[in-house]
Image 1: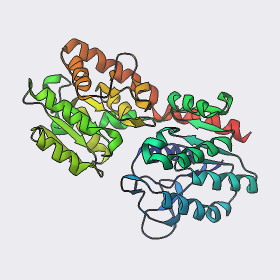
Image 2 (image 1 turned 180 degrees about the vertical axis):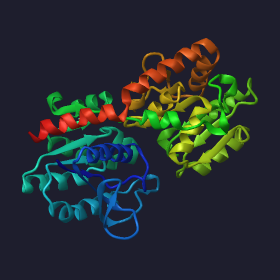
Image 3 (image 1 turned 120 degrees about the vertical axis):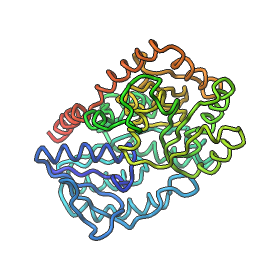
Image 4 (image 1 turned 135 degrees about the vertical axis):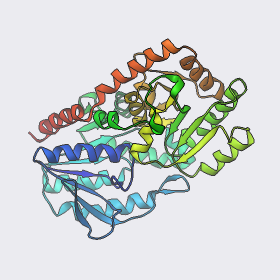
Length: 386
């Protein structure tokens, strides 16, 4: 098969769940003898088209900021979609897999698909619907409209979670037109990474951090609520340690908040970390907290599970990560510092309970091995092409 993936952000120059998904699945397709092409923004130096880990990467336009004032750039998405058309039209593919957000490239793919008479599939990482109004106010009407239009132009859709599938159905996409193929993890790779500081024991007493967060520091991640929860904890647990991994436009605000609440010495702002360093930090943490209002999947939750680390996340309408919390491997609470602090305390207050949760988390992570996910994707591709 000759497969094309379309997404403006390209791994490893941009690191996120969608980028990682395309990279991992593309590698496996290539290893099976398939020809894999990735069309994205040209983040790299040199030629517009390069070979990378068995795949052909096409830089269809110059690198631009993906975010402006903390929000996804509309101009970047429009320019990418326009430049994509001539690049994608040059070749014939057996299948084009386009990541839906930020939408405009979906229209390009649909046009090329019709002109070249090759099938396409739309991969949905999340569905925003009314969240557009929270994101940009009244102008959210246009974002919601574009999302609705995209949902109408494809009869082959992949959702990365049951949560996203249900939201697609709310948009009016028939259930028969949606297949759930989740994101995954490289379980073997994670198991081979040594914990930070050379930790050898899996016990709670050997952990460096009590709490860890990992993600982009933007408002919808609600890291400020986590810092307030740490302040509540400090009243009875002065030595509490929290590690915040990631960077973003809210960093300075969060550092200032930690200082104002008197927990600056308790909170380690670790900044962006390469994958091995991130996993090493998760392995030396007791609990991962993900207080996001919006998550399309929540890859870090599965990564924490693979590290035998339970998770606390929040019961928010657009947070798909709460759908991953099953089989006593974590807790879902309301979004608030008191509720998050209580959730963390419930996990940590009983050593036997913690070990049960850690074992359950590890077992659940095994269901998301990339090799297993790949076989599901390959079967879906074959059904679409045939």
